[in-house]
Length: 124
Image (cartoon, rainbow, N blue to C red; front, side):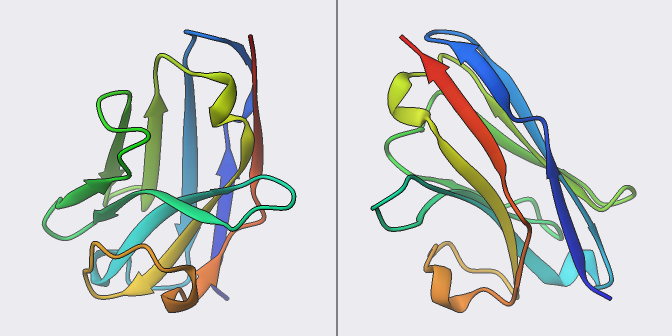
């Protein structure tokens, strides 16, 4: 059974930091692109950052470039998202998702597996 389980969300002040983790199981981790998405009510789910577990290639949305860092641990089959200098606009439900192969495009329709999400709230 494929599982993606997010953790690490919570409340932070503007300028603060949070670290999200996505624990995966049930598929060959190194064959997949793992991506963090986020969504606020009434808006489209948007890609934040993605990583290739096999070769470490990464990509970031412009809105988070320079503030967020994605990393992966193949031994633990886990992907983390370090979020620094948080802004109120980062408030959202954050999901991790997996798709086979490597691609920097973060189109939610391409993804095979999804977690349940973890809430991030940033106060001004």
